[in-house]
Image 1 (cartoon, rainbow, N blue to C red):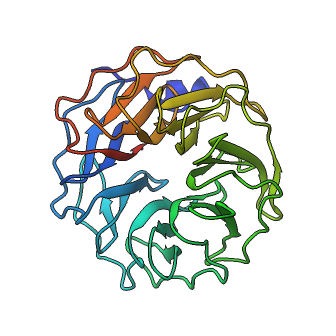
Image 2 (image 1 turned 60 degrees about the vertical axis):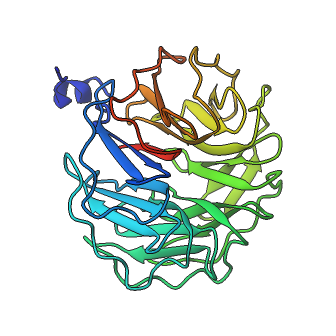
Length: 340
């Protein structure tokens, strides 16, 4: 195996590629990670302390040395040091998530971690983080309504957005060592249940994958004023309920995974949707719940409900030939996927 020195990549103005890919899934061990170098390496050993229920969301911190997994069974969040494999699980927070944690994310400098819950009195919660959980922040005065499925901090860590099951389907909050007053709802609401939310790398755009056509909705965003105008829908819509969404490394492409074949749809992005890229020659196997780009935008991964549970493609102005499946597959339906 050969590697390009980081200095050469930096001189070329590019980021190095990711070195780890992780999948959250149903069925024990519920979290599976592999070395990544334009293909799957040998699966890392499972963590000594496994998540207790289905893995629903996962996120590496920005330093890439800690991996958080949210799930549907107490303690609802599990956090591990990660350095060429799983370290000893961090102690649970003193005040656990309310229940059924779905999504998880870190802020810009890894000093806070947030989760959203499908059930409970609080659907959005956050804790200070310093090599372990601090005392949980007071929840926002206006909680998201009903089941909440996804959470993302903006790149500056000064705001976060959540996707949830009832109107207005997307909510946003300022954040500074705690929650500020909820932003006003967007003028044009999404059409249905919000399932996945993300910001672009500059934080001036927020995108939502949702149930009900057009399945994808994108807004301008400002951390002071909140939601701006909705961008026009793509000319060729995703074919079914949007489940999750991701911009590539330089915000020139947006990908959404969904419930109906071809299960993944990708568009050029430049302050609006371009013409949809052709589908991959080998489609994901079924309804897809997670999507992620590696950090230099050279690969795109999809987590889906049936075997092999994760599918990864090279990307260069379109889908390349699917990478070979890992030798040891995840053990159940893929719910989320991330690169470090």
